[in-house]
Length: 341
Image 1 (cartoon, rainbow, N blue to C red):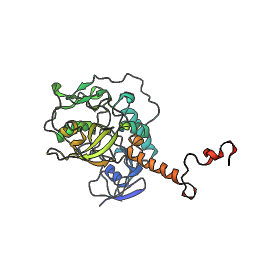
Image 2: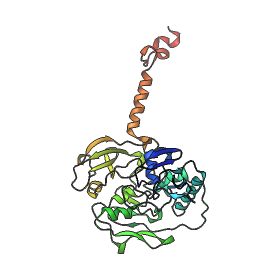
Image 3: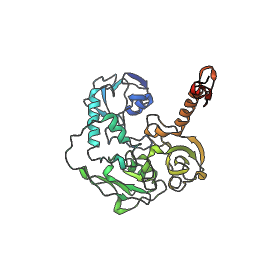
Image 4: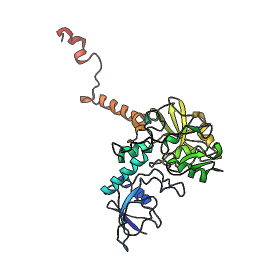
């Protein structure tokens, strides 16, 4: 099996593994960001260029470097390859330029966007972008359109990652939407105003890395960091039935597929589970979802609050000699008032 070294960490990987897949096997900061690549969608990747890396040595047989940064999601590992990601200033500068390019037409409407708090573009801009943009021209603008009774398309926010098109091609019965036109006027749209109506169309919402495709049943109901995610399942004859319920109080605001640490869906779910089962009684509750502590969703996560409360209670009880002090003791003791001892 070929060996590859990424940021001075060497790993042995199966034949045919890409640089991005090898980096994910290592984990941590070595992993390049990716906005269009999706491991469960065939032929995805190669569109956004955020995963670019520098190949310092092509292979043990041919140690020459590649002349320019390459997309790690589409470049296969060669034995003896040496790759630079976070340890290359050239890559960091080039990636910042890619992020600037992606943000050229993206509106600054995070305060009103339902994707805020779980938007990959927000994370990308914060971690890899620059403070200012050099773009001085008018941004592209599109009218919002409904591409189904429960899905709304904000083409103004779209970064043309093609994920939703891949889902429709590979997961649904018949694709009725795609990318039309070319260049600066390219856009996601339905053919002859067809609506997307099939059992798995809701998955285009889960794969969208920005707020371009949103769930109309969840729009403007709550910020995601005010909700409580819970893993649950049901016996469904169409899909895996493994979902994530997003609670606000006792109300289920939305149902989504479960996602891994890279924001990718673990198991696809059908529209019946996503849109029609909004009661706790419809599900078998497994327990709180694991939330990355770096995520804004963890800010009010009830599991963390339980730990915090237990810590505070323990600290309050940890007094000298194990004695618990209550009201009426010490300075508030009636015997001590007015100099009485």
